[in-house]
Image 1 (cartoon, chains in turn cyan, purple):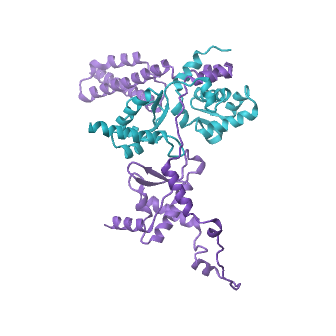
Image 2: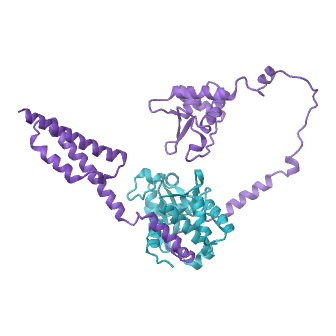
Image 3: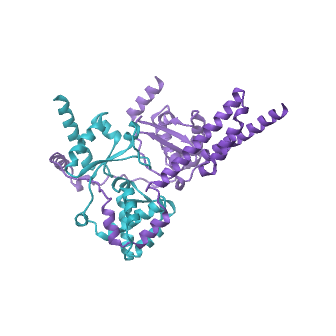
Length: 186
Length: 272
């Protein structure tokens, strides 16, 4: 009973930490969770993840490493960032309610897939040219800045675009590539 | 007898070449299929009956071991290519160009799991905010004019300005270079030194000055500041040549505060 009460309290604490924004970026670092919840924070997050399943939400872990980590070490977990994300996918109608037009999402999809196709970096001009095929010029600029501001894309030296933290947290890159390759052209 | 000796010599040379080839594939990231495994194994097999001495057998074992590493690289290469994580960039680019925007958007929604983030005011923070507001002085009271004294106009010398700390005796760049040289001399065998160990000086003012100049050493690319968050420790690593600001991949600002009490504690700890 004591043990159950302990974890109930910890799960509540974890919910507050993960749902509410504490920094400029959402999510909480592993070492912060360790400090607040104790060293058994991975277990607390597992329990919370179980509760969130019925709400179609999940606890998502994004590691520092570029490649996916199957069995993370304690050090990798402490350095990782934890988020609450949607477990399932978003219906087009829902996306509209979230403030995203379908062509904004398509633009983001094109930018992300193009960068993935170019092995993780692509010149901004090339991505903008691709978007200009189907979107008015003024919208391309507004959208690109929005993707960068939100953390989906990052702009490095020589105007090169990279995938940023939000893409790593929110987008299942493998599924996106599978869907793209399997899609029938118009 | 001489021919056996010659054969052994030739065999060792072959094995050495195999080891070199495998090592260069491993270390330089060359295409692992450059190594023809069957041919290499045939060579190893051909000379194996000639080996008698332990060092000869060790060389043979090393060649086989290096070959095994290359076979692992070949296996990894095949595994990666056979997963859908590897895709032909041209094929993907072609698909992106030909697919319609709406279709791409709908497709993206199937692999997009947005982050849930909330911002909400609580009754506690509201109460805190009201308390703060009540204690906050009106602007007209906060922005009272500072009393000024009338002074006669006169001339001053450079020495007087240095004395009043309006001008500095040495050029700033000179201070920067002096501290950079000191940093380079004080690092350990790993080429780094604890930040606090480096900036700490006999007086509080001197410590602040060293921390101030050190911040420019890092900003201007004369040194790197490593932050080990879990250990709550910072290390300074000098560069042999200044690295221009733009060459650093990720640049972040890090405020470091040094209060008088902290300096005293630091001093006691370092001296004790």
